[in-house]
Amino acid sequence: MPVQGFGVDIGGSGIKGCTVDLDAGRLIGERVRIETPDPSIPEKVYAVVAEIVTSFGWTEGIGVTFPGVMKHGVVYTAANVDKSWIGADIDAELARYIPGSVTSLNDADAAGLAEMRYGAGRDQRGVVLMLTFGTGIGSALFVDGHLVPNTEFGHIQVDGEDGERRASAGAREREELDWAEWAQRVDRYLDVLEGQLWPDLIIVGGGVSKKAHKWVPLLSTRTPIVPAQLQNDAGIVGAALAAHESSPE
Ligand code: BGC
Image 1 (cartoon, rainbow, N blue to C red):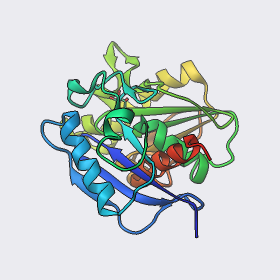
Image 2: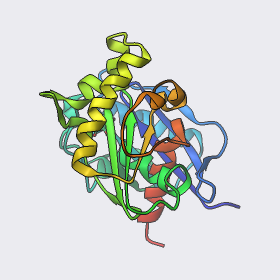
Image 3: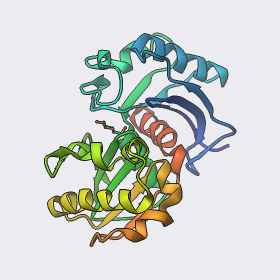
């Protein structure tokens, strides 16, 4: 029997959860996805998370991702979700809805942890930057395999604008950009970020990483860029891993 965990990925459009094989870094069976309630206020989202966890019969601790700055279970920012999340203590509040304990962390940090352990960042030393391109841009920074949490590089200023406003996958859809037009924006974004961090490797994740061949070859970045390997499951796997590693043996 592999070591098992449970991860839930809270996103702006969907909430996804599954049991995770922590030896292999894979989902066990089919994940469950439920639309994010509208408005996506904490109580409604907690109820959905509880529904997902219960549907698997899972009673132990779980890991949960959130798309904002997270410190010790508490939400500090909510760029693309309901502002009523700010100040919510996810670890304490969500634990009232489910049998086990809760360990929450930033969504990109979770995806990065999974990629570093099981995917494109495996055994990579030095400075590794994981970026997730979705509605916003999430970031996770690793130094010799150790996470520097909550880097929030999606919000660096690029030509006087919030980086993710111009270069997220959401911007590509909103403004109906073709791959070449969007790649130009990502290139400019990465140019600014690269000049500040000088990473050894950049891992690009999010839904658009499935189509990496359409835009990654168009980038002029000096740093090697590789697509994420766990793709849609990285958040769930990383959340389960974070919860497992934070729980007392
Ligand atoms: C948020 C980050 C999050 C990213 C991806 C950004 O707008 O500030 O915390 O990781 O979106 O969801």
